[in-house]
Structure formats: C-alpha cells, structure tokens
Length: 288
Image (cartoon, rainbow, N blue to C red):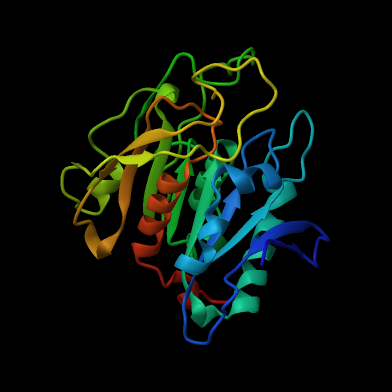
C-alpha cells in the first residue's frame, strides 16, 4: 500500500504516514518523524529521502508533515508547529503501541534539521523520547566548515552566518549527511563521538549508486552547491566505532552533490540500516 494521509485531530492538520503492510504483534517498528527544509513541503521531502520505500524491509513508520508558516516561505516555527509535532508522536505511539516502537528518530533536511536540533536541545518532550537524529544537510554537532558557495543562489546571506547547531542535552545517536559542494571541509573528529568515548573515525566502503535520486529543485538557476539534476553518485561513509551504549555516530559525504538533490537508493538504504541498528527504547520508557 502507498502512503495514507493521517489527521492530527487536535489541530486538523494532515500529514503523510507510511507503515508496513504486515503489522504483526511482537514485531518491533522504527519510527521516523521527517521534517522538510525551509521553503519546502512534506510531499517534496517525502521523495528527497524516500525512507518509505523501505518500510517493509526495515519495518519503518514514517510520518512526514508540513510546516504551518508560509510567509515569507514555508518553515518550521516553535509557536506554530511544536504542538502539532508532539501530537504526531502521540498519534503514532497510540496507533502502534508504545511497546512496539523499538526506536524513534528525528530526520530533518536543512531548516528541518535545525528544527530537529532545537527540539532536542530545548523541548523535554523530544529529549525524553528521541533515540537518534539524522541531519540531512541540517547542521552537524560540532564544527564543520561551510562552503562559501553554499545556500540558495541569489538569496541574501544572514548577518553573522548561519547559527551553529546546539549540543543536545540528551542521549541519542547522530548521523550527519551532506553534499560535498555544501562544505569546505569535514573534521576528522566529533564532539558527539567524544561524549560517548568512541574510537577514531573509520572510513567504511563507499556507497556507489547507479540510479539517481527521485527529486530536485525544479526552480532552475541552480549551482553545484545548491544542487543540480538527479544523477548517480558515490557517498563516503565515516563511522566513530565503539561508542558507549552502542550509539551510532557517523558522517556521510555525498560526492559531487549539493543541497537539494534527492538521495539515491543505496545511500538511502545505508542510512536506514544505521538507524535500525542503533539502540532505542526511550519511547517505551517515556511517561506517556
């Protein structure tokens, strides 16, 4: 079955919901709440990182909402969206059962990644429940040098540059994925890996995709840093091994890619494999 449109009854807002066709008692589920970037919508983001295509193989529940604020562009705002996002989590937990949620991840692209970071840094509801954060060009915990060409072509540069992600005050796994043209360099170290006593980073085999991603920015006037047409690609994968409690901490660089090219099938699956392998259980221990 394809995606369904679910409704947050408390706000009346709709969101995409994907789950396995074969929901059996005792078979655990991995829950992803996926937040789009500024100027985007849930339907576009649904295809940018198409985790829903792997929902059967990896027993995923994927919720993909849209932000409420539309001016000057659609983007996530605490006052307008935090309640809705919490309602989605409660909806999923009630629908599938707390005991059946193996782990819960926030996955956010661009401003959706920065919003994930804010939720994990300031909102106890998410701090108590989230087992991992997948940042898709949405900020890295710790320094990363941004390319001088990064950002939407022609868009004004914010004074003082973009805000750096905060260090979340909670226990979780963390995966950062970015396009090569978005950054000037990637550090070999990670403060999040240091927090969990992980070893020096290890480069894993490259992930080579012969197929292109499913979506891109159709507005034109693009650059390599912003993202060109979908095409095959290669991704470098770095992990920080032996982190305490089995936490997964990794950096992924998609070579010759920018900000908006949809993820290719094999690197999508590789990220999902890391998510599924990471420890969970925080939803089951939460108060509600």
